[in-house]
Image 1: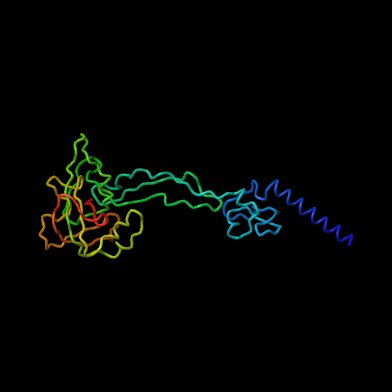
Image 2: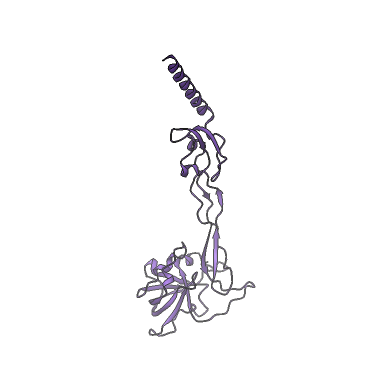
Length: 263
């Protein structure tokens, strides 16, 4: 009994000593590592309340072999990104092209924090002057369209500060559209999902898309109501279809999801 009691006392003393050292130094104190790092380990109490080899790398959360103080010593840090930059100009003048905007990482994720979101976004666009400032040539077909949000970023005044012509609106009936329109799930192409067959849509014609005689490329206002007109979505060359003219209006009055702009 004496020997047994002595052994128990020694075990308790050892456990207390180990516990005190763990509380003082911390199993993961100064040992936090990225990813899966098998060299990032120590001997201490584990999170499953057993004592032995435990790890302080990010993957220990998945493998469930972290040291007891991992979340205290190695707190998760989510990715932090900046605000979006302004949209760039179109990559190519005088033709359907793309514009982009970016944001940068201000804090990388660590210790299992939320990963970084997308750092670049692209959207369709078109500009009507070339690199020398000369006005681009025109053709009549098809009509290129994009989200009404694009129109909100267009200038409302000329270089002299004079207000630009507000333009007009064409009301059209969607006849056909290709399946890839519905497959879009990027943030700035979701608007294509609302191009639905049989629906009435409104498309604004405004500067700089409008020409001197108040036309937009492919708007069809000079065509009769039986004419089948062609359109294409800016940002996805596989999203296109046909529509028929209903009427020309001073302002668009369709629901926002069914209102677009000539580009």
